[in-house]
Image (cartoon, rainbow, N blue to C red; front, side, top):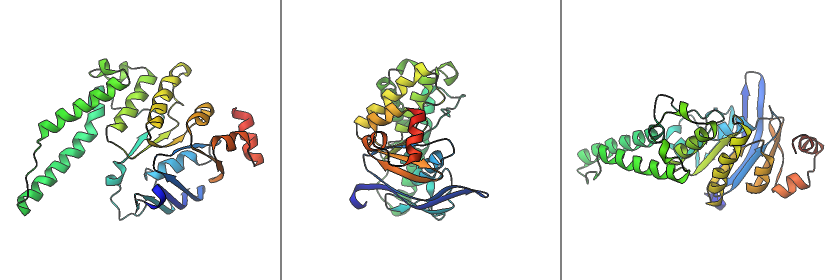
Length: 268
């Protein structure tokens, strides 16, 4: 990775029919960097975020993650997407699974598939057989999930279903579910927009913890105070392009364009 750059976006475009949402966007995101994307509704910020892990297939351009263009249709996106945790506005928890099951289902599936591949590889190549079995994988992932729940003070919720949780609890569960995959980067798409005001703080506090621990984060948010406190760099999007970017002090304290000045006057 050149100069510690984890994600390189090059001339990225995205259209929905005749509607051009992203127009030749280019940006680098470094390992450990906290990048916050702000802008008015319809500016393209959520679409840019979703293109970073190809939940939205770009119309053109490149998204180079760890040296691989994951926007290339020939690339197995699922392999790379495992390293990119995603947190949505609407939690997206499985309502028919307990909290513990929500957190463990993906890592258990991924590790079980790897176990099967290792067994076949050992069989055909007469290599060393895997030391783990499926039951051990399940036990390890449950133990890791419980530690994550303890971290956010929700270990007593392990066996309940999401319908019994508050919005803030659901979103914190969604965050630790993403963390259970040991991602290289966390993507947040307006993670507090669906929460009641009194629940916003508990989610932002967890995100601040991740930031302080050095997690690479790309965050779309309307929480300007949070952006000032956490961001290494702020991107202001307007009309499908990055219209202005810089440190929080530069973007919020000394905006250059009239468009950014107008936006900040409305949201601050």
